[in-house]
Image 1 (cartoon, rainbow, N blue to C red):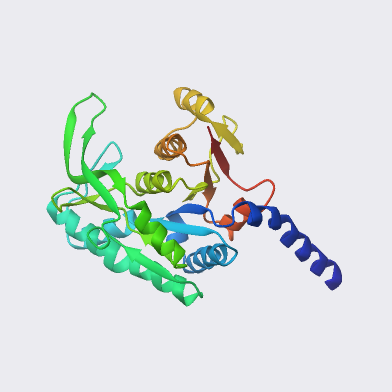
Image 2: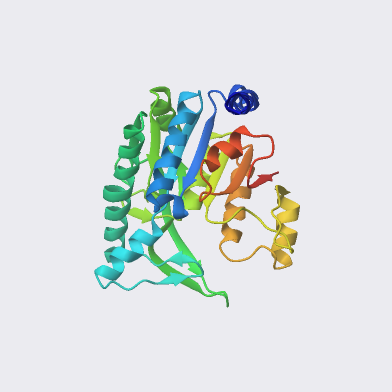
Length: 290
């Protein structure tokens, strides 16, 4: 029995070999969020898997979220939390909290855990590194009214050559979704949008979005393994793709438009979800293609 198990393990490694060869030296942007950021065991496992990706020759770049942590800190400070059509209204007071939570807490913790698991990492947030360039983003209500969202922003550029410099040094760049404007003002950016932009500027082979759901589901709640733009638009129109999944698939389509080869939406609550999606024939989530 033990011998059979060893053979099975060897077969798993052999199944991974073509993917290791195919993606050797290629950039992969991983949007790190959801339960995988808060469950201690999952957190350790995900970051260990990212270190493994680097050791087998791939170039992972991490873009992390932090919404629940920001909300918790805002509640503790009794600062109003307000969203407009899913976008956070970021006052100057909120922006201070966003920078502190994302940069001083979450970003540094991720860098620490990567190093703890044998990898090299470099953290960036807002003015530190000025990796993400941004401008002010306006929201819009359901009736079409424009809303000032304060210091909420959208990506206008990415210092991709600077990121490539760190990748060549064998570092794993870890980016907080905080951008910098032309006049030095910092902006709070949706993490999915930031990850899609970074992937697009790097012309990454893959953009992987870690979520708390299996991926895109059809009318019968069955996982859709592969989906393209026309199918996405059809399912949104039919009300099958709804809620928080809409911005995820839209970010994915935007990344594909800017040169990313494939986008993967996977359940980060599954142990070793990244490895199962990248290194197996069938994967575990939804792959979005052109």
